[in-house]
Amino acid sequence: MGISSQILPLEMAKGDIIPLSVSQKNHFNEIRPKEVSESPAENFASLLFKTLQKVNDQQVDSEKLSQQLVSDPGSVSLHSVLIAAEKARMSLTYTKTLADLAVKTYRELINLR
Image 1 (cartoon, helix red, strand yellow):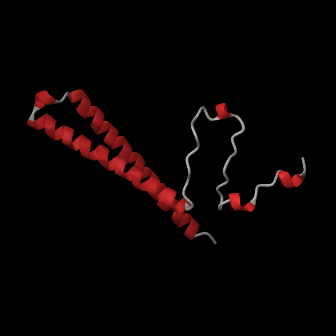
Image 2 (image 1 turned 45 degrees about the vertical axis):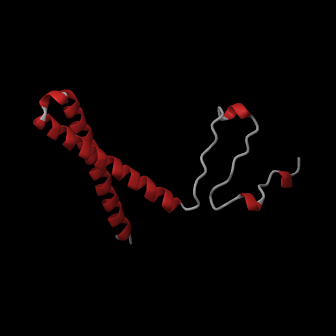
Image 3 (image 1 turned 30 degrees about the horizontal axis):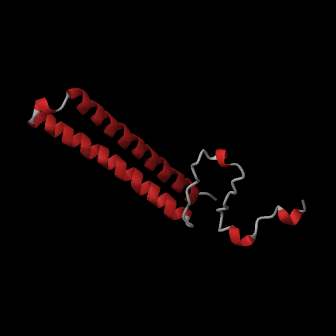
């Protein structure tokens, strides 16, 4: 087996994404790897948007359950209201912490000399 047979053809490489060849079917348990888009910035932006949307959804669900508890106490348990409120609080706190760290890191990079 020569060196030229081990090199990946240039037309198969697209940026930093290189397709894998599967030699054994059971290596992936019939699950194929996901195709990724060309731009890592688009992937990061969509991930960030989805994450922030999920945090917002948790806040809205918590608020709806709290209002439902006040207006119709028998329709929802206090336990589920408290769990939803705590999930919303924790996700918002975590998001705020990550945002603060991102801003701090950005400022440190800008002030590098």
